[in-house]
Image (tube, rainbow, N blue to C red):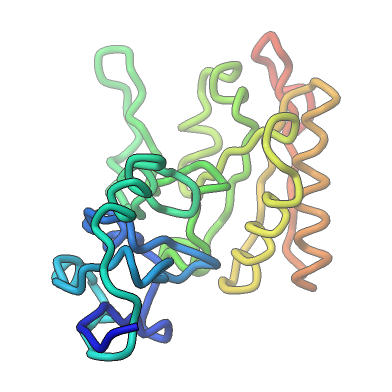
Amino acid sequence: MVTRKIIDIDETLCNGCGQCVIECAEGAIEIRNGKAKVISDSFCDGLGVCLGTCPTGALRIMERHADPFDAKAAEAHHAIEPTKCIGLACPSSFNRKMPVPKTEIKGGRQTPQLSNWPVQLRLAHPNAPYFKGAHLLLAADCSAFAYANMHGDFIKGRIALIACPKLDEAQQSIEKLTEILNLNNIEDITVVRMEVPCCSGLNMIVRKALELSKKNVPVKTVTIGTNGDILMD
């Protein structure tokens, strides 16, 4: 080890937005358990390019004992996973709150009502400000393709998350939703699922998350048929 300058992250200030991950050319930072972490001292050059992108001031440069910066190791690491998208480590999963226009029809097309990004449950950050006091929508991936008026009937006025209980890892989904419930005063949850049997896994995810979080949140389930009709409301 040597004494050198290196990035230090104050977890009490970090909101897990992931912007520092995007700006770190060496791939030294990842989001783990909702907080930015330097995954290896040898990947961090200590130059502090990421500092100016942090909205909360959680990053600083400090001088301490650390492994020397290894440019070749950092380059090899970055080459293996240049756009890793799990846990907010790529631009597509950067938290965004978007303005929503009034619902109206223009040229035969309904105005989009999505107000948050990302929408994939596995990419959602539990500390995102739009979860505070939210009316939450958990929808099956396929439902928006089957149901024509998804934006006007279900996304409008809600924070939207999507998941596939057949293809996604169920335990990860349960843990993520549990953390969202623990950190935010969710008002209610609307589950929009398809009629196919495997889609009942969405209800299981919600049920388990509520049990683990010990929260009493009203849940409504809507089932969409493969022909696009609402079968249960």
